[in-house]
Length: 522
Image: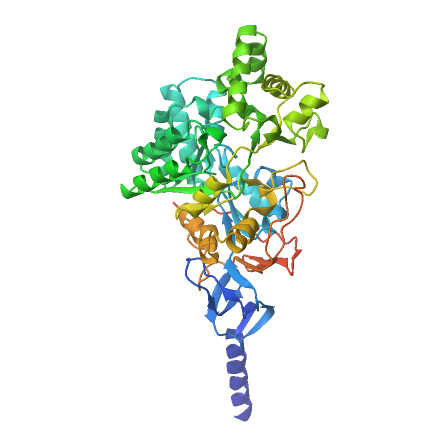
Protein backbone atom coordinates (compact mmCIF):
# COMPACT_ATOMS: atom_id res chain seq x y z
CA UNK A 1 0.00 0.00 0.00
CA UNK A 2 2.86 2.33 0.88
CA UNK A 3 4.52 1.57 -2.48
CA UNK A 4 1.31 2.38 -4.40
CA UNK A 5 0.90 5.62 -2.48
CA UNK A 6 4.54 6.52 -3.19
CA UNK A 7 4.05 5.88 -6.93
CA UNK A 8 0.87 7.98 -7.02
CA UNK A 9 2.55 10.85 -5.19
CA UNK A 10 5.54 10.60 -7.54
CA UNK A 11 3.28 10.78 -10.60
CA UNK A 12 1.44 13.76 -9.10
CA UNK A 13 4.75 15.47 -8.32
CA UNK A 14 6.09 14.89 -11.84
CA UNK A 15 2.90 16.18 -13.43
CA UNK A 16 2.92 19.30 -11.27
CA UNK A 17 6.53 19.94 -12.20
CA UNK A 18 5.72 19.26 -15.83
CA UNK A 19 3.01 21.92 -15.69
CA UNK A 20 5.60 24.38 -14.43
CA UNK A 21 8.32 23.36 -16.84
CA UNK A 22 8.71 25.54 -19.94
CA UNK A 23 11.10 25.55 -22.85
CA UNK A 24 12.04 29.20 -22.38
CA UNK A 25 11.37 31.71 -19.63
CA UNK A 26 11.93 35.46 -19.98
CA UNK A 27 11.90 37.24 -16.64
CA UNK A 28 12.42 40.74 -15.19
CA UNK A 29 11.93 42.51 -18.55
CA UNK A 30 9.99 45.70 -19.24
CA UNK A 31 7.30 44.42 -21.59
CA UNK A 32 5.71 46.46 -24.37
CA UNK A 33 2.96 44.15 -25.60
CA UNK A 34 2.53 45.76 -29.04
CA UNK A 35 -0.81 47.49 -28.41
CA UNK A 36 0.69 50.93 -27.80
CA UNK A 37 -0.23 50.75 -24.13
CA UNK A 38 2.30 51.67 -21.41
CA UNK A 39 4.80 48.94 -20.48
CA UNK A 40 4.36 46.40 -17.70
CA UNK A 41 6.72 44.21 -15.73
CA UNK A 42 5.88 40.53 -16.09
CA UNK A 43 7.52 37.26 -17.04
CA UNK A 44 6.88 35.28 -20.21
CA UNK A 45 6.86 31.49 -20.53
CA UNK A 46 7.23 29.78 -23.89
CA UNK A 47 6.58 26.16 -24.78
CA UNK A 48 7.11 25.01 -28.32
CA UNK A 49 6.34 27.94 -30.61
CA UNK A 50 3.77 29.65 -28.36
CA UNK A 51 3.57 32.04 -25.44
CA UNK A 52 1.64 29.94 -22.94
CA UNK A 53 1.91 31.92 -19.71
CA UNK A 54 2.53 35.51 -18.62
CA UNK A 55 2.69 36.94 -15.11
CA UNK A 56 4.89 36.42 -12.06
CA UNK A 57 6.75 33.25 -12.95
CA UNK A 58 9.82 33.56 -10.73
CA UNK A 59 9.20 30.11 -9.23
CA UNK A 60 8.61 28.44 -12.56
CA UNK A 61 11.10 26.07 -14.13
CA UNK A 62 12.35 26.18 -17.71
CA UNK A 63 14.93 24.48 -19.87
CA UNK A 64 16.39 27.93 -20.64
CA UNK A 65 15.98 31.34 -19.07
CA UNK A 66 16.69 34.90 -20.17
CA UNK A 67 17.27 37.59 -17.59
CA UNK A 68 15.80 40.67 -19.29
CA UNK A 69 16.48 43.05 -16.41
CA UNK A 70 17.00 46.60 -17.78
CA UNK A 71 15.94 45.42 -21.25
CA UNK A 72 12.82 45.98 -23.36
CA UNK A 73 10.77 42.93 -24.31
CA UNK A 74 8.69 43.47 -27.43
CA UNK A 75 6.82 41.40 -29.99
CA UNK A 76 9.11 40.58 -32.90
CA UNK A 77 9.11 43.30 -35.53
CA UNK A 78 6.99 42.68 -38.62
CA UNK A 79 8.31 44.16 -41.86
CA UNK A 80 5.47 44.37 -44.39
CA UNK A 81 7.65 45.71 -47.22
CA UNK A 82 10.67 43.49 -47.82
CA UNK A 83 12.47 42.59 -51.03
CA UNK A 84 13.00 38.92 -50.33
CA UNK A 85 14.39 38.08 -53.77
CA UNK A 86 17.78 36.81 -52.42
CA UNK A 87 16.16 34.44 -49.90
CA UNK A 88 17.03 31.29 -51.85
CA UNK A 89 20.71 32.27 -51.53
CA UNK A 90 20.38 33.83 -48.07
CA UNK A 91 17.75 31.66 -46.35
CA UNK A 92 19.15 32.43 -42.89
CA UNK A 93 17.86 36.05 -43.26
CA UNK A 94 20.60 37.30 -40.93
CA UNK A 95 20.56 40.94 -42.04
CA UNK A 96 16.89 41.24 -41.15
CA UNK A 97 16.89 39.17 -37.97
CA UNK A 98 19.71 41.31 -36.58
CA UNK A 99 17.32 44.28 -36.86
CA UNK A 100 14.84 42.49 -34.62
CA UNK A 101 12.61 41.38 -37.49
CA UNK A 102 10.83 38.06 -37.00
CA UNK A 103 8.33 38.25 -39.91
CA UNK A 104 8.58 39.79 -43.37
CA UNK A 105 6.14 40.19 -46.24
CA UNK A 106 7.66 39.97 -49.72
CA UNK A 107 6.41 40.70 -53.21
CA UNK A 108 6.15 44.50 -52.90
CA UNK A 109 6.09 47.18 -55.62
CA UNK A 110 4.33 44.89 -58.09
CA UNK A 111 7.14 42.31 -58.08
CA UNK A 112 7.74 38.93 -56.50
CA UNK A 113 7.29 35.27 -57.44
CA UNK A 114 4.58 34.04 -59.80
CA UNK A 115 3.23 31.40 -59.54
CA UNK A 116 3.34 31.69 -55.77
CA UNK A 117 2.40 28.22 -54.55
CA UNK A 118 5.42 26.28 -55.87
CA UNK A 119 7.75 29.03 -54.63
CA UNK A 120 6.37 28.83 -51.10
CA UNK A 121 6.82 25.07 -51.19
CA UNK A 122 10.51 25.49 -52.05
CA UNK A 123 10.99 27.89 -49.13
CA UNK A 124 9.40 25.35 -46.81
CA UNK A 125 11.74 22.66 -48.06
CA UNK A 126 15.00 24.65 -47.71
CA UNK A 127 14.10 26.22 -44.36
CA UNK A 128 14.17 29.94 -43.59
CA UNK A 129 15.49 32.06 -40.76
CA UNK A 130 12.39 34.21 -40.22
CA UNK A 131 8.69 33.95 -41.01
CA UNK A 132 7.82 35.09 -44.51
CA UNK A 133 4.62 35.69 -46.43
CA UNK A 134 4.00 37.19 -49.86
CA UNK A 135 1.86 39.54 -51.86
CA UNK A 136 1.17 38.79 -55.52
CA UNK A 137 2.71 41.45 -57.74
CA UNK A 138 0.68 43.10 -60.51
CA UNK A 139 3.84 43.74 -62.56
CA UNK A 140 4.83 40.07 -62.36
CA UNK A 141 1.37 39.01 -63.50
CA UNK A 142 1.06 41.60 -66.28
CA UNK A 143 4.53 40.83 -67.59
CA UNK A 144 3.70 37.13 -67.84
CA UNK A 145 0.51 37.76 -69.83
CA UNK A 146 1.39 40.92 -71.79
CA UNK A 147 5.19 41.13 -71.64
CA UNK A 148 6.24 44.82 -71.57
CA UNK A 149 3.59 46.08 -73.99
CA UNK A 150 2.24 49.59 -73.52
CA UNK A 151 -1.49 49.07 -74.10
CA UNK A 152 -4.74 47.99 -72.51
CA UNK A 153 -5.26 44.25 -71.99
CA UNK A 154 -7.75 42.44 -74.15
CA UNK A 155 -10.71 40.82 -72.42
CA UNK A 156 -8.96 37.46 -72.64
CA UNK A 157 -5.74 38.87 -71.18
CA UNK A 158 -7.66 40.51 -68.36
CA UNK A 159 -9.32 37.21 -67.52
CA UNK A 160 -5.92 35.50 -67.52
CA UNK A 161 -4.53 38.09 -65.11
CA UNK A 162 -7.58 37.77 -62.86
CA UNK A 163 -7.09 34.02 -62.80
CA UNK A 164 -3.44 34.39 -61.75
CA UNK A 165 -4.34 36.82 -58.96
CA UNK A 166 -7.12 34.54 -57.73
CA UNK A 167 -4.82 31.52 -57.86
CA UNK A 168 -2.15 33.33 -55.82
CA UNK A 169 -4.72 34.33 -53.21
CA UNK A 170 -5.85 30.70 -52.93
CA UNK A 171 -2.19 29.71 -52.49
CA UNK A 172 -1.79 32.07 -49.54
CA UNK A 173 -0.99 35.56 -50.83
CA UNK A 174 -1.79 38.34 -48.37
CA UNK A 175 -2.95 40.66 -51.12
CA UNK A 176 -1.87 42.38 -54.29
CA UNK A 177 0.93 44.89 -54.77
CA UNK A 178 1.45 47.36 -57.59
CA UNK A 179 4.46 49.22 -58.88
CA UNK A 180 2.78 51.88 -60.97
CA UNK A 181 6.00 53.87 -61.32
CA UNK A 182 7.69 50.92 -63.01
CA UNK A 183 7.08 49.06 -66.23
CA UNK A 184 4.85 47.35 -67.12
CA UNK A 185 2.65 48.60 -64.24
CA UNK A 186 3.03 52.16 -65.47
CA UNK A 187 1.20 51.18 -68.66
CA UNK A 188 -1.89 50.03 -66.75
CA UNK A 189 -4.91 52.30 -66.48
CA UNK A 190 -6.72 52.58 -63.18
CA UNK A 191 -9.66 50.42 -64.36
CA UNK A 192 -7.27 47.50 -64.83
CA UNK A 193 -5.92 47.89 -61.30
CA UNK A 194 -9.43 48.05 -59.85
CA UNK A 195 -10.58 44.88 -61.60
CA UNK A 196 -7.51 42.92 -60.49
CA UNK A 197 -7.69 44.29 -56.94
CA UNK A 198 -11.25 43.00 -56.69
CA UNK A 199 -9.82 39.48 -57.01
CA UNK A 200 -7.65 40.08 -53.95
CA UNK A 201 -10.52 41.76 -52.11
CA UNK A 202 -12.76 38.70 -52.56
CA UNK A 203 -10.29 36.75 -50.44
CA UNK A 204 -9.74 39.36 -47.75
CA UNK A 205 -6.50 40.66 -49.19
CA UNK A 206 -4.87 44.06 -48.96
CA UNK A 207 -3.65 46.38 -51.74
CA UNK A 208 -0.18 47.91 -51.37
CA UNK A 209 0.86 50.49 -53.90
CA UNK A 210 4.09 51.99 -55.07
CA UNK A 211 2.26 55.06 -56.30
CA UNK A 212 2.26 56.07 -59.94
CA UNK A 213 4.29 59.12 -58.97
CA UNK A 214 5.95 60.20 -55.74
CA UNK A 215 7.20 63.53 -57.06
CA UNK A 216 5.30 66.24 -58.90
CA UNK A 217 2.31 63.95 -59.36
CA UNK A 218 2.14 62.53 -55.83
CA UNK A 219 -1.12 64.28 -54.89
CA UNK A 220 -3.01 62.80 -57.83
CA UNK A 221 -1.33 59.45 -57.24
CA UNK A 222 -2.59 59.33 -53.65
CA UNK A 223 -6.06 60.21 -54.93
CA UNK A 224 -5.80 57.34 -57.43
CA UNK A 225 -4.93 54.86 -54.67
CA UNK A 226 -7.88 56.06 -52.58
CA UNK A 227 -10.16 55.71 -55.62
CA UNK A 228 -8.94 52.12 -56.07
CA UNK A 229 -9.71 51.39 -52.42
CA UNK A 230 -13.26 52.68 -52.84
CA UNK A 231 -14.05 50.96 -56.13
CA UNK A 232 -12.39 47.62 -55.34
CA UNK A 233 -13.56 47.61 -51.70
CA UNK A 234 -10.07 46.84 -50.43
CA UNK A 235 -7.76 48.18 -47.69
CA UNK A 236 -4.91 50.21 -49.19
CA UNK A 237 -1.38 50.80 -47.94
CA UNK A 238 0.52 53.68 -49.55
CA UNK A 239 3.80 51.86 -49.50
CA UNK A 240 7.13 53.56 -48.60
CA UNK A 241 5.20 56.82 -48.59
CA UNK A 242 7.30 59.87 -49.37
CA UNK A 243 7.43 63.06 -51.40
CA UNK A 244 10.32 63.15 -53.86
CA UNK A 245 12.11 66.14 -55.38
CA UNK A 246 12.72 69.65 -54.06
CA UNK A 247 9.62 71.20 -55.68
CA UNK A 248 7.45 68.89 -53.53
CA UNK A 249 9.20 69.19 -50.18
CA UNK A 250 6.67 70.00 -47.47
CA UNK A 251 3.70 68.60 -49.39
CA UNK A 252 3.39 65.53 -47.15
CA UNK A 253 0.87 67.56 -45.14
CA UNK A 254 -1.41 67.42 -48.19
CA UNK A 255 -1.00 63.70 -48.83
CA UNK A 256 -1.67 62.93 -45.18
CA UNK A 257 -4.76 65.16 -45.23
CA UNK A 258 -6.04 63.06 -48.15
CA UNK A 259 -5.54 59.92 -46.05
CA UNK A 260 -7.43 61.46 -43.12
CA UNK A 261 -10.28 62.59 -45.35
CA UNK A 262 -10.62 59.14 -46.94
CA UNK A 263 -10.67 57.45 -43.54
CA UNK A 264 -13.42 59.79 -42.36
CA UNK A 265 -15.45 58.48 -45.31
CA UNK A 266 -14.93 54.92 -44.07
CA UNK A 267 -12.07 53.84 -46.35
CA UNK A 268 -9.23 51.84 -44.81
CA UNK A 269 -6.17 53.78 -45.99
CA UNK A 270 -2.80 53.19 -44.30
CA UNK A 271 0.84 53.96 -45.01
CA UNK A 272 4.22 52.39 -44.48
CA UNK A 273 7.54 54.22 -44.32
CA UNK A 274 11.29 53.73 -43.94
CA UNK A 275 13.11 56.29 -41.72
CA UNK A 276 15.53 57.77 -44.25
CA UNK A 277 15.54 60.81 -46.56
CA UNK A 278 16.92 58.91 -49.54
CA UNK A 279 15.31 56.27 -51.76
CA UNK A 280 16.76 53.28 -53.61
CA UNK A 281 15.79 51.91 -57.00
CA UNK A 282 17.05 51.39 -60.54
CA UNK A 283 18.58 54.29 -62.47
CA UNK A 284 15.85 53.64 -65.03
CA UNK A 285 13.49 55.55 -62.71
CA UNK A 286 14.95 58.68 -64.37
CA UNK A 287 14.09 57.42 -67.86
CA UNK A 288 10.60 57.92 -69.35
CA UNK A 289 8.68 54.65 -69.21
CA UNK A 290 7.34 54.93 -72.77
CA UNK A 291 10.91 54.68 -74.08
CA UNK A 292 11.39 51.29 -72.40
CA UNK A 293 8.15 49.69 -73.59
CA UNK A 294 8.93 46.35 -75.22
CA UNK A 295 12.18 45.90 -73.33
CA UNK A 296 15.85 46.70 -73.81
CA UNK A 297 15.92 45.98 -77.54
CA UNK A 298 13.16 48.51 -78.18
CA UNK A 299 14.84 51.04 -75.90
CA UNK A 300 18.06 50.78 -77.91
CA UNK A 301 16.10 51.11 -81.15
CA UNK A 302 14.49 54.33 -79.94
CA UNK A 303 17.87 55.71 -78.91
CA UNK A 304 19.05 55.26 -82.50
CA UNK A 305 16.41 57.77 -83.62
CA UNK A 306 17.89 61.27 -82.97
CA UNK A 307 14.48 62.83 -82.33
CA UNK A 308 13.42 60.14 -79.86
CA UNK A 309 16.81 60.17 -78.16
CA UNK A 310 16.56 63.90 -77.70
CA UNK A 311 13.12 63.49 -76.15
CA UNK A 312 14.40 60.77 -73.80
CA UNK A 313 17.35 62.91 -72.75
CA UNK A 314 15.18 65.96 -72.08
CA UNK A 315 12.86 63.89 -69.86
CA UNK A 316 15.87 62.59 -67.91
CA UNK A 317 17.08 66.16 -67.39
CA UNK A 318 13.59 67.10 -66.18
CA UNK A 319 13.62 64.21 -63.70
CA UNK A 320 17.07 65.14 -62.39
CA UNK A 321 15.83 68.69 -61.87
CA UNK A 322 12.42 67.96 -60.37
CA UNK A 323 12.26 64.36 -59.22
CA UNK A 324 14.72 61.81 -57.83
CA UNK A 325 17.75 63.69 -59.11
CA UNK A 326 17.25 66.39 -56.49
CA UNK A 327 18.60 68.99 -58.95
CA UNK A 328 22.16 67.82 -58.25
CA UNK A 329 24.20 65.01 -59.82
CA UNK A 330 25.86 64.52 -56.43
CA UNK A 331 22.51 63.38 -55.02
CA UNK A 332 22.49 60.30 -57.30
CA UNK A 333 24.69 57.65 -55.69
CA UNK A 334 25.49 54.32 -57.37
CA UNK A 335 24.74 51.26 -55.26
CA UNK A 336 24.96 48.18 -57.51
CA UNK A 337 26.79 48.39 -60.84
CA UNK A 338 27.67 44.97 -62.22
CA UNK A 339 29.41 46.36 -65.29
CA UNK A 340 31.60 48.86 -63.37
CA UNK A 341 31.84 47.97 -59.71
CA UNK A 342 34.26 50.79 -58.93
CA UNK A 343 31.29 53.17 -59.29
CA UNK A 344 29.51 51.61 -56.30
CA UNK A 345 29.23 54.18 -53.54
CA UNK A 346 30.20 56.98 -55.92
CA UNK A 347 27.90 59.60 -57.46
CA UNK A 348 26.80 60.55 -60.95
CA UNK A 349 28.82 63.74 -60.52
CA UNK A 350 31.90 61.64 -59.77
CA UNK A 351 31.34 59.56 -62.91
CA UNK A 352 31.17 62.72 -65.01
CA UNK A 353 34.51 63.88 -63.65
CA UNK A 354 35.99 60.40 -64.07
CA UNK A 355 35.14 60.61 -67.78
CA UNK A 356 36.52 64.14 -68.07
CA UNK A 357 33.08 65.72 -68.42
CA UNK A 358 31.66 68.82 -66.77
CA UNK A 359 29.01 67.73 -64.21
CA UNK A 360 26.15 69.37 -66.08
CA UNK A 361 22.59 68.07 -66.26
CA UNK A 362 23.06 67.35 -69.95
CA UNK A 363 26.18 65.25 -69.38
CA UNK A 364 24.52 63.54 -66.45
CA UNK A 365 21.56 62.60 -68.65
CA UNK A 366 23.92 61.14 -71.28
CA UNK A 367 25.54 58.97 -68.61
CA UNK A 368 22.16 57.80 -67.36
CA UNK A 369 21.47 56.61 -70.90
CA UNK A 370 24.89 54.96 -71.04
CA UNK A 371 24.23 53.18 -67.75
CA UNK A 372 20.92 51.83 -69.02
CA UNK A 373 22.53 50.69 -72.28
CA UNK A 374 25.04 48.75 -70.17
CA UNK A 375 22.26 46.91 -68.39
CA UNK A 376 21.18 49.44 -65.78
CA UNK A 377 22.31 50.14 -62.24
CA UNK A 378 20.84 50.44 -58.77
CA UNK A 379 21.12 53.87 -57.18
CA UNK A 380 20.44 55.75 -53.96
CA UNK A 381 18.62 59.03 -54.60
CA UNK A 382 19.10 61.72 -51.94
CA UNK A 383 16.01 63.72 -52.89
CA UNK A 384 13.74 63.75 -49.83
CA UNK A 385 13.35 66.25 -46.99
CA UNK A 386 13.79 65.18 -43.36
CA UNK A 387 10.78 67.21 -42.23
CA UNK A 388 8.53 65.19 -44.53
CA UNK A 389 10.03 61.98 -43.14
CA UNK A 390 9.15 63.11 -39.62
CA UNK A 391 5.68 64.35 -40.61
CA UNK A 392 4.79 61.01 -42.19
CA UNK A 393 6.29 58.99 -39.34
CA UNK A 394 4.10 60.75 -36.76
CA UNK A 395 0.87 59.99 -38.61
CA UNK A 396 -1.22 57.49 -36.61
CA UNK A 397 -1.74 55.24 -39.66
CA UNK A 398 1.97 54.95 -40.56
CA UNK A 399 3.58 51.54 -40.17
CA UNK A 400 7.38 51.21 -40.00
CA UNK A 401 8.68 49.04 -42.86
CA UNK A 402 12.15 48.77 -44.36
CA UNK A 403 11.74 48.49 -48.13
CA UNK A 404 15.00 46.63 -47.57
CA UNK A 405 16.53 43.64 -49.27
CA UNK A 406 18.21 40.63 -47.70
CA UNK A 407 21.93 41.23 -47.99
CA UNK A 408 25.28 39.63 -47.25
CA UNK A 409 28.07 41.66 -45.70
CA UNK A 410 30.23 43.19 -48.45
CA UNK A 411 27.80 42.71 -51.36
CA UNK A 412 27.51 45.97 -53.33
CA UNK A 413 26.80 49.34 -51.73
CA UNK A 414 23.25 48.96 -50.37
CA UNK A 415 20.89 51.46 -48.84
CA UNK A 416 21.45 51.49 -45.05
CA UNK A 417 17.79 50.60 -44.50
CA UNK A 418 18.74 47.03 -45.42
CA UNK A 419 20.59 46.82 -42.10
CA UNK A 420 19.18 49.50 -39.83
CA UNK A 421 15.52 50.45 -40.30
CA UNK A 422 14.02 49.33 -37.00
CA UNK A 423 16.96 50.15 -34.69
CA UNK A 424 17.16 53.58 -36.38
CA UNK A 425 13.58 54.40 -35.45
CA UNK A 426 14.09 53.22 -31.86
CA UNK A 427 17.45 54.93 -31.41
CA UNK A 428 17.24 58.09 -33.50
CA UNK A 429 13.54 58.97 -33.67
CA UNK A 430 12.44 57.64 -30.26
CA UNK A 431 15.40 58.08 -27.90
CA UNK A 432 17.25 60.99 -29.50
CA UNK A 433 14.64 63.07 -31.35
CA UNK A 434 11.60 62.01 -29.31
CA UNK A 435 9.41 62.04 -32.44
CA UNK A 436 7.61 58.91 -31.23
CA UNK A 437 7.23 57.35 -27.81
CA UNK A 438 8.62 53.86 -27.40
CA UNK A 439 5.07 52.50 -27.10
CA UNK A 440 4.03 54.20 -30.35
CA UNK A 441 7.09 52.98 -32.25
CA UNK A 442 6.74 49.38 -31.11
CA UNK A 443 3.04 49.42 -32.02
CA UNK A 444 3.96 50.65 -35.53
CA UNK A 445 6.42 47.75 -35.85
CA UNK A 446 4.32 44.92 -34.41
CA UNK A 447 0.55 44.87 -33.92
CA UNK A 448 -0.22 47.54 -36.54
CA UNK A 449 1.47 45.65 -39.40
CA UNK A 450 0.05 42.33 -38.17
CA UNK A 451 -3.48 43.73 -38.28
CA UNK A 452 -2.90 45.45 -41.63
CA UNK A 453 -1.87 42.15 -43.22
CA UNK A 454 -4.34 39.95 -41.39
CA UNK A 455 -1.71 38.02 -39.43
CA UNK A 456 -3.79 37.04 -36.42
CA UNK A 457 -1.31 35.20 -34.19
CA UNK A 458 1.74 37.45 -34.19
CA UNK A 459 2.61 41.04 -33.31
CA UNK A 460 1.33 40.84 -29.72
CA UNK A 461 2.67 39.51 -26.44
CA UNK A 462 -0.27 37.56 -25.07
CA UNK A 463 -0.97 34.01 -24.02
CA UNK A 464 -1.72 31.86 -27.06
CA UNK A 465 0.23 34.03 -29.51
CA UNK A 466 3.22 32.73 -31.43
CA UNK A 467 6.50 33.21 -29.61
CA UNK A 468 8.12 35.84 -31.82
CA UNK A 469 9.91 38.23 -29.46
CA UNK A 470 12.64 40.86 -29.73
CA UNK A 471 14.61 41.94 -26.65
CA UNK A 472 16.71 45.10 -26.81
CA UNK A 473 18.40 47.79 -24.78
CA UNK A 474 16.49 51.03 -25.28
CA UNK A 475 19.50 53.05 -24.10
CA UNK A 476 21.93 51.68 -26.68
CA UNK A 477 19.90 50.46 -29.66
CA UNK A 478 20.99 52.28 -32.83
CA UNK A 479 21.63 51.71 -36.52
CA UNK A 480 25.28 51.74 -37.61
CA UNK A 481 24.87 51.40 -41.37
CA UNK A 482 25.45 54.67 -43.25
CA UNK A 483 25.29 55.86 -46.85
CA UNK A 484 29.09 55.97 -46.87
CA UNK A 485 29.70 52.65 -45.06
CA UNK A 486 26.49 50.58 -45.30
CA UNK A 487 27.72 47.10 -44.38
CA UNK A 488 27.31 47.36 -40.62
CA UNK A 489 24.89 45.55 -38.34
CA UNK A 490 22.92 47.54 -35.80
CA UNK A 491 23.65 47.52 -32.08
CA UNK A 492 21.56 47.08 -28.96
CA UNK A 493 19.47 44.02 -29.86
CA UNK A 494 20.34 41.16 -27.53
CA UNK A 495 17.79 38.45 -28.33
CA UNK A 496 15.48 37.58 -31.20
CA UNK A 497 13.12 34.67 -30.64
CA UNK A 498 11.34 33.21 -33.67
CA UNK A 499 8.69 30.56 -33.09
CA UNK A 500 10.13 29.92 -29.63
CA UNK A 501 13.72 29.46 -30.88
CA UNK A 502 16.67 31.75 -30.18
CA UNK A 503 17.73 33.12 -33.56
CA UNK A 504 19.84 35.82 -31.88
CA UNK A 505 21.34 35.11 -28.46
CA UNK A 506 23.39 37.63 -26.52
CA UNK A 507 23.90 39.43 -29.82
CA UNK A 508 25.23 36.30 -31.55
CA UNK A 509 23.41 34.92 -34.60
CA UNK A 510 22.28 31.30 -34.60
CA UNK A 511 21.72 29.65 -37.99
CA UNK A 512 18.75 27.59 -36.87
CA UNK A 513 16.18 28.47 -39.57
CA UNK A 514 13.25 28.62 -37.18
CA UNK A 515 11.04 30.67 -39.51
CA UNK A 516 7.81 29.49 -41.10
CA UNK A 517 6.14 30.15 -44.44
CA UNK A 518 2.98 32.11 -43.73
CA UNK A 519 -0.15 31.90 -45.85
CA UNK A 520 -3.17 34.15 -45.70
CA UNK A 521 -6.17 32.29 -44.32
CA UNK A 522 -9.10 32.53 -46.74
